[in-house]
Image (cartoon, rainbow, N blue to C red; front, side, top):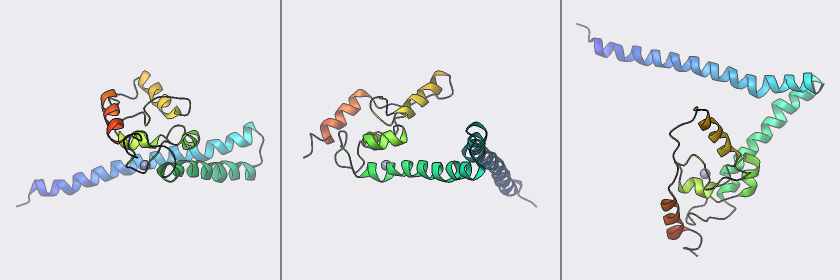
Length: 166
Ligand SMILES: [Zn+2]
């Protein structure tokens, strides 16, 4: 006698893994197209760069620069800056990290309210990622966005903010 339930679990898992592999393959293809192929072709066709120059700039220099800017979030923004929301944690507000990462440098707020989609209390020109999310909210592609309430922000600042601990 064969237990149908027992046999269906591995089949279900295999089916899920196959679907995941197809999605991953599509994502990698789109990622490669948008990150490397199109920028390289743009350099060659639009700016008349040589192939070696276009590949060097778009596949190596630009990509490495973007990675290094992104890595500053977990290095510089965890060490330098001010801590107005929670002065007991290392993450800090770093305008220079926000400048290179389009808004991800407001890290003290982000770690104090990790559920908040804005990653910063207020919007400014350095926080373009919030503007990007709001753009997608306006066309319905982003929804159910969570925000910290004014009271919770004020409460945390009073308890653990820079002026509370020193
Ligand atoms: Zn962090």
